[in-house]
Amino acid sequence: MKGSVDISWINIAFGYLILIIPFLLFWYYKLNLIKDSVIAIIRMTLQLYLLGFYLEYIFKLNSILVNITWIIVMIFISVYTTIKKSKVHFKFYFIPLLSSLSFVVILTLLYFIGFMIGVKYFFNTRYLIPIVGILLGNSIQSNIIALNSFNSKLKSEYNLYQFAIANGASKYDALLPFIQHALRQALNPMIAMTAVVGLISIPGMMTGQILGGSSPIVAIKYQIITMISIFFAKALVIVLTLNFTNRFIFDELGNKRV
Amino acid sequence: MIKLENINVKFKEKIVFNDFNLDIAKAEKIVITGNSGVGKSTLFNLFLGFIKADIGDIYINNLSVNSQNIDKIRKQISYIPQNVNIPFNKAKDLFNAQFLYSKINLPNIEKIKEIFKDFNLKHTILEHQVSSLSGGEKQRILLISSILTNKKLLLWDEPTSALDLKNKEILLKYVKNMENITILSISHDDFWINNATRVVKL
Image (cartoon, rainbow over all chains, first blue to last red):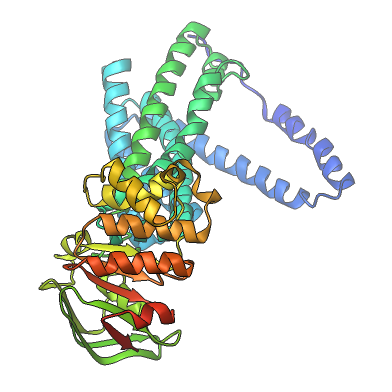
């Protein structure tokens, strides 16, 4: 496997220069987007630079302890991001989200790295860190959609929930329409994305691998495994998140706390 | 059937119940009335465990309303809210809901046809979308299913608010025949109040 051609920092500087054109367009159309764009690009640069720096270091180390710490930190950041973006109470959502994400990440890693890719050394940084990143990124997205749809439907149709429990429905039956709605909302984009992958765009990870020197056939195999693991992780994480949170957000009489 | 002992309920600074007591015997047909804001709906919310009393005990069928008993208690109750705009898809779903929730067998179609006819409805209305029904139709569908559940305690919030006199009389006829059933309704309707076995004015 040969590596790709390195890009010089001077060439990257020319890369930034071309952004003048979109900025001029923003200015021409009075979009007020220049400040946000500049901040976004500076953030992107710093974050990636730090990530590259860090990854270079931990790839060299290839240590179990560092990798596990990295995964734990990533899971905590994911939980925090999900709570922030879903605008929910930390108190009720922290433990359920932490449990569902950790469980799904561990299970998916065991199956895909341990069994399907079958690497000899499970804690190999090259496999572990990128896959955890992809899994968490996708799980956060689905969890946010699921929690938002669940909570907004429950809020607007709380009378349906109350009607159900008042007339003897179990919590499971009373919440079923809300869970179904949230699952559909969160899963539909994933199913749509899975169906068109490779048709309208080459997935980022595959692009990266091809640029990195892998053969396209090897790259698609990894992509297929990645898509399956994302599918699996998303579906499972949403179901678990909704079920775990429902143990925390209702009081002992079945009334929603907040 | 229902016993409230020294109930105190306060919302922020507003005292709704202060040492309130009420005893309801089996098979009574009670109408609770009073101005808005006096706590009529709060009373239902207490029975259903939607809110907790700050002080005092509530017993339904000798079971204290608490987290251990709440599922058992709710299974004995049929509740119809004041706002009958419950987001169901078809009229059939609105009608079936109470049976499905409590895992009670649906009544047979002949029985359904007969009671729907009494209430001046065609049973084929069950195939319609809820969104196309009038308030009165939704109210009658809910009342019919409440009656057919054969539950021992019925809580109806403003059950006649969208009914004309003819349908009110039909409902009263059914209520009078339900000898072993306790019915509590919240109402401002003189017709309904005048036909209660007891009126509780809050």
